[in-house]
Image 1 (cartoon, one colour):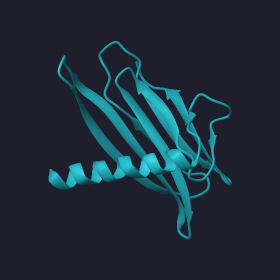
Image 2 (cartoon, one colour):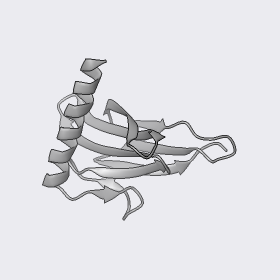
Image 3 (cartoon, helix red, strand yellow):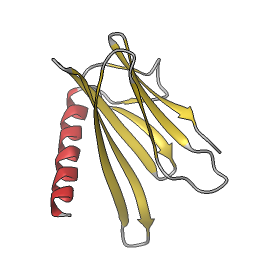
Image 4 (tube, helix red, strand yellow):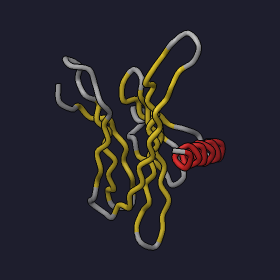
Length: 128
């Protein structure tokens, strides 16, 4: 568990670095096309959000998404579950990321796809 905490901490530091280098976008802004190394935030529910960025490498475009979910709230402090997803997308490929949701609520799904020479990040409707 210690290595997970270290990895989550490192991911947070990297995201902070990228966020200071380029302005952060919300997935609902503009046409949701993301420039290389530009962080974009996607709300996945009232207690969950994701930050995504990508970099071009010789083997494809590496897309990194870190999801932060508040799993417990009390008067003292919040507890978070942080998960990091990393994928290599070639033209035409996509990935879907979602978080658990309450019965009766509509699931929020995040779609990341590579369209030619662009990465698109969008929140799409999921199952109810």
